[in-house]
Image (cartoon, rainbow, N blue to C red):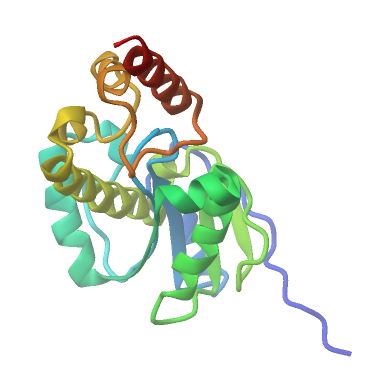
Length: 222
């Protein structure tokens, strides 16, 4: 009878550096290691972007993409791509409305890993477990701040999505997508109240539904 290999438990201190998880797994022969994260989960417009990254070289300066300036994110993005295996999935607003955000997030993570050109031996996900992955996995709380491959995935997803939102701003300049990237801000709320939603808003989100209703009421009075 074949017994499945299970690595001995390790204790990884959160202050052991950004590569501590990768080093602990590598000591047990579990390489390559993929990190998975998404961008746009809390936005009410634009796509959800999920990235899976296998780092083939150590990169200094990685961190949670939300803690980095846009310029630093772009610099790190340019460093990550040449030395990594990357899978990116872009999930449009209509699919989010039809299937639900969390279901799309889980599916997107599976699909991003499936796009990697090589099979990971272990997968680290940010925040919550993802069933159905093709290798053993671990959900790491605030993984984009403590695991290098997850931080890299966070940066790739964020830069990819930000560029898409800047392009969307050119099509719908009245919403200010280039500035707020589809997240809820006072200016975005005002634009929704004034213009109603565009096709790239997430109609199942409360903020968009309210903006649509107020816009229709205003048009009726006029």
